[in-house]
Image (cartoon, rainbow, N blue to C red):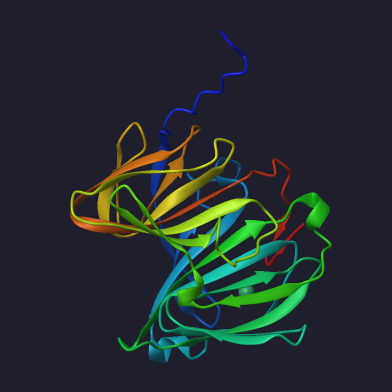
Length: 264
Ligand code: MN
């Protein structure tokens, strides 16, 4: 053995596949909660606390999410259809359109209101991801950033088209090292998606189905595949193609005190 030779980590298996569940949020807006859940606990996907998939008709979106506080983590709201408006207690205001995202660092504390606007289809759809802050960052000043659709790098990996929401070349600033990809694969397409070996996370299917991980675990739209330990994630999708988000980040491995909108 030559200790100076580093070998690439083996392809990752998928630890488990789980369903998302419909819950009520804000002013009675139904959302699909992908995580956390009974099967997808924080320790498996640390640093990711929560993922909600909202898809509502315009009239239902009007109540939106009235002003409320957060503390101790970061939020990325990625719009798939329609738009989202933001205003907060720091005086930040912003609107993002389909394909863009808003990043909030709640840090030591922030109040914000979230409005939803309809797209051409008459509906509003997006993903809200909560990323924990490390203990050293819990008291950082709050912040806000809007990134529009055209600002993200687009990679071709295998047969996949990868939009880099967070990662090398993306303007999105997060305090936790992470990658967050919007991945599209054509019918029967495959790719080995690169991930640092120390990252944890998940893939969540927006449409289609596929086999995820070196152990080829089947998952379909609305399901989440939790990543096991390893390097790149192999994916082969079915006859309809597939679209999914892949989120992976450096785990904090610190205890979490979860109190509603506060993560201390
Ligand atoms: Mn909020």
